[in-house]
Image (cartoon, rainbow, N blue to C red; front, side, top):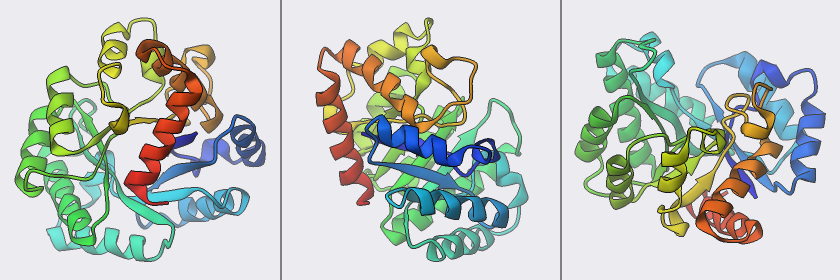
Length: 259
């Protein structure tokens, strides 16, 4: 199995990183996609330590909507910063996480939209898939992807919690849909029902660690090994064996990110 979205370079993993990686391998994980911001030297150094312990990990690099406010200048500034970070990371396989977040409003909406659009254009120019974060911003996410992607896009809506209409639209565009620990929560019946209808070949699983631990570990720091709990929930609602689902999501990850 593969954790398709994690933040292993977060400071939360500094004290016991080797043990975290060991537990991931013991749980059957063969790889993970680690998400990094561009230009953060401290986080890049922590990422190097992750890669030394787990060389199979691959990277996504992009400006998160929460950090978009630091890029209020021209589109060229965004493109240059992310392109340089990608070029400096030979294991980078995607542009992300990028997108829009209107829940916390940590960056002005117009700046978020401009930064997102610039990175969508860059991903398409480089032929890389996108890792997309969207929260309470479905309409604008549709608008930007619809205008920039010419009816077809490569990437994933990570940690999906959106509407069925949005999921259908994203699938029609060619995107994958990934589910995290939220799908295991008691009040997530609608999300579990939606997850059962995502085509098998477009499904991914993730932790988004250190956030969003699945129900069995709720309230604790999340880690890649616990993606197994997400997979078990999805296998149950989709009426397949967990090993079958694990094989499918692994194949989907390989097909999308070409690790």
